[in-house]
Image (cartoon, rainbow, N blue to C red):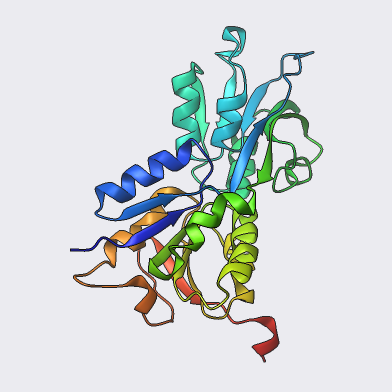
Length: 263
């Protein structure tokens, strides 16, 4: 029985975990990251904050662990980031199990005001945490990595297999934007399904009317992959599934209509 092909666009090294999960479920994963993570030069801490905040797995991975900070309250955007932070040695980790809005809510509940937090993450984070938290919390940013789009030449081998690929896994809006532009150039009539972690990640695919998208009910990989696993049937092809709305546990499928065709 031929295995269905899934393009995993997630950044390295976490794409390996996604690929392992897909392989365990009977798919053939093709790992070709749409983005790459570039470490930033380490900046010394000038003052100990009241809490640390991580908005990504890469933020935890790229930030040097200092034993002196091990007992600080740590707020992580999701469960995977929280588990990774605990594994690094932080002892007081709280997961928001969601997105940046959930994270800010958890910080407000768990940190006495006024507070001073250190936000460890990307050079250009998504969302303005300082504005969302308000003046009662001082947010200091510590960029520990940057995100760059993969060279299109690194995706040429994927182009040769696009006709057989029915699924693309998209973990971020930036990845969605890069993948959509690349598809528009490589095969604008591709008719598979983009499995997207958020509405923002799915938005760039509106320019490609042949594509439908599954938007995860929660911004985590478990929800992102669950609909793919649950809706698989004998001989099924995700590219042939009818467009519409699917309110399964893991994701909802939406037909992306280009702005020019909307009334």
